[in-house]
Image (cartoon, rainbow, N blue to C red; front, side, top):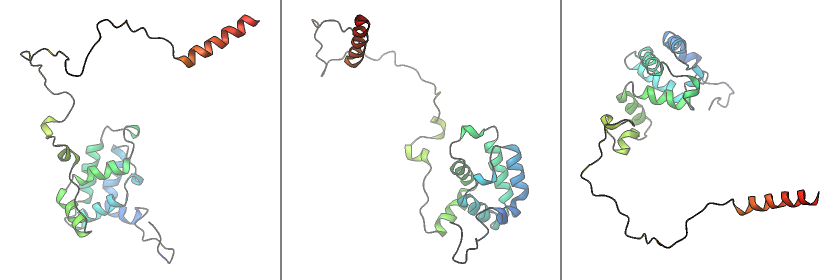
Length: 174
């Protein structure tokens, strides 16, 4: 991305020309969160421009992003550009769909809908109760255990045993 044939950039790559319209929102975003202006990629800027041009809500979208990111540190997110954009997309889903449609692209469904998970069921700490009336598990099919087999006693791997043998032999020669 970047420069055309004449060597001049469009002015959008550095975010400065776009950033003028969102000066207040960007200042608030950098002040309240760990996000930097450089963390907003071309897609994020395009989204902000679209929201600004179609309703004047660019600063409102940045405020939404600041609220969503409040409390996050830089080391908690490995890809800030993707994370910031995915959060921005949720500000106005219709705007996101319109941008994708204008580019002739399909709208990618949210990952939670791909997994079939509902918002109520997300999260690792769900109420769970074991079925006390369930039958006891007894392995049978495919598991033919030898009742007369000797007990397994773990030993050092062969490579480690050879190394320790070499050390002992050197000590014996000295």
